[in-house]
Length: 305
Image 1 (cartoon, one colour):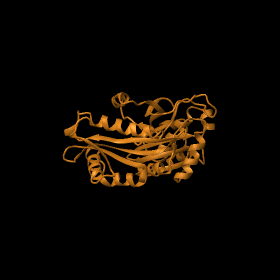
Image 2 (tube, helix red, strand yellow):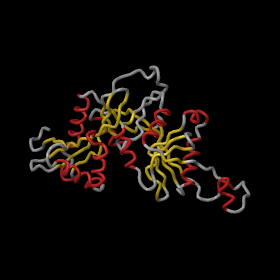
Image 3 (cartoon, helix red, strand yellow):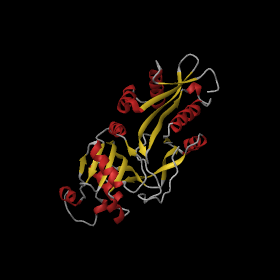
């Protein structure tokens, strides 16, 4: 920091965590219990960084957590970057993000950020990040009536239900889900998630959400919420065998799950090269054609945006 009135501190120092938590809740509208839960899930794999003013008040902050590894490098995500309204426009957040990035890179790790919009992407690129981890994202509206089945004269609603495709959704614990995930992603460069990251993913699921195995292994999904008529999947992943059969299978399965859960729309993310999901700094160069990698697009899949 060039301004001597400001100082960068971490949550290991007295009073910093409380100030960070207060600013987080003020800016993003989360409850203090959510912040406490996040820090509890990651344990010593998360550190809060804060800029304090001359009076010791936290005026800008971020939380940096280790989410797993990518080709042997530890991956750290800078999350919940925020600045108090009366201190914006002074470059505090940028200086803090760059400070944390430099620390991660000095330790041989990869620093990740997950911008929510294009303007933030431009801002992060000026700080030294580049698009690296990609995913596709889809939003589908599902019919809530019989329009899709007009060709069938099946009488009452009970008979009609027999013609609807039924999807087997089996709740999975984190270890089981991750075993399927690693098997499905074999051959694609991707972040291998840590146990603490998996714990946080489960924590992020609410309103009947959770981790699921679909049809005994046809696919897996992480449902973050299934309430209010919307089904949101942070991650949907097809068995590669099915993926090779048809490009439409993912929409068929996700739409069927939405209908089955009473949702009128489904939004999901999946491996693909359509959209930059996370930007990175510090990734060691490698040849996309090296043995074991059939794809050039790297995948993260679980940014807590």
